[in-house]
Length: 168
Image (cartoon, rainbow, N blue to C red):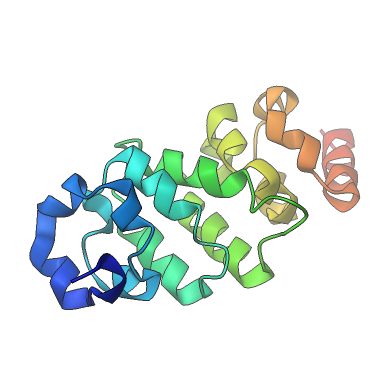
């Protein structure tokens, strides 16, 4: 049947074949079914980015389930995070619980904030505005100085960074 009617079991039965699905079918798959299935990491980067465009209305627990399926170090998480960090467009922001899930997934993938590179920080995009101040203080000033995403820092975050820099 049509992709919009596929169940979690049907997606799981596809296994690695999901990587062959056309983008049009991906746009119709239920994100709830996909979050419950174990095939999300099987998609290619283009497919993952297309799916990420649909994550705005997704409940935080479903978003967490999808992000948790992505393996460390193969570039897929980086691509999805960059897509999510680019935002939902036209003045729509991530809900606080969604942003927390995305940031927590980034910490799980990248490790402690003190080890983050500029590229990893930039993958957060506008989500950097919701990055916890305590973690932000751990990021190297060198990485922050050249991060494009630093343009999204809030006044509170900038104040904390300035106070932290003065204490050095």
